Image (cartoon, one colour):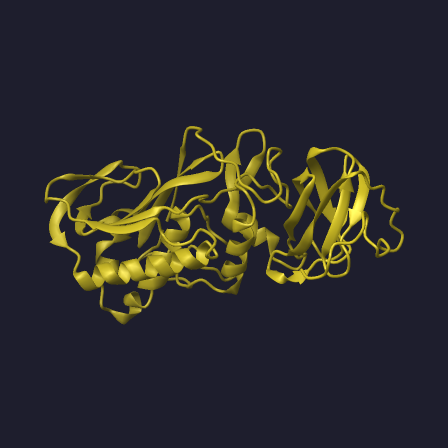
Length: 353
């Protein structure tokens, strides 16, 4: 959410500020100095290990450990041919100098598997704030994101704000112009492409609706992000915008965005210069992101920054990990390689300005 520049300084939008070819089991290259020799098994998996920030950069000498047994390494270019002792899913730990240790499941036998590791230099604390904050029973704070493209719906009628937790809002007489709708769609589309790293494709659909004046507009729709402009939001809450999103075991399933009518329609340069950043910020919430502190990000609560390089890298890493991934880089027990499991569990709502 965001606070109007002329008012407070708190809240969202406040006036404050691999190459290479597979090697033999265990790799033809020697293990890192001082490391134990690998003990490969008969169930082979081949592929490559890359940096989560750049698919073209191989992760060298990555150690594969399963059931407390070192079973192989990647070569200097990131390619590997590892022999597991057990067929089926092997819970595997991947370690390498310069990278965050990862735990995941690897199915053996297998071929052409592409695994990624997070560089140690990446700001993992800020990433955790942005993506790994949803409480999942039995695991604690975990990554939340969409696993399928949401539909985007823009309500053309201005709504009357009542509370951030309402399930519906009354449509007023005022409507958004075609130009305003187009600008909102453009900002949401651009923000979506960046904050999903392009890995979910485009929105499932982009539509508008024009509700009759006096009618109630329901804002919760599975698989959909609903965007509304609301009269009285800033006056009642101090925020330029507010968003809610629902999760089911870490998978985001629906979202809802409120933009303050006076702020979002203002032509005053002191406010209008932040239309795009505020819309992308609230979209970030609807995609499952929370506030980032301590560094510049589109998810800073003041909502004055459009997505930057950190945001692009964080989104890329998030999209390479399944919902439920935990710090430092631990995939859920049921996860196999880089796949993400679907769920039909009850949803939990979250909200932020």
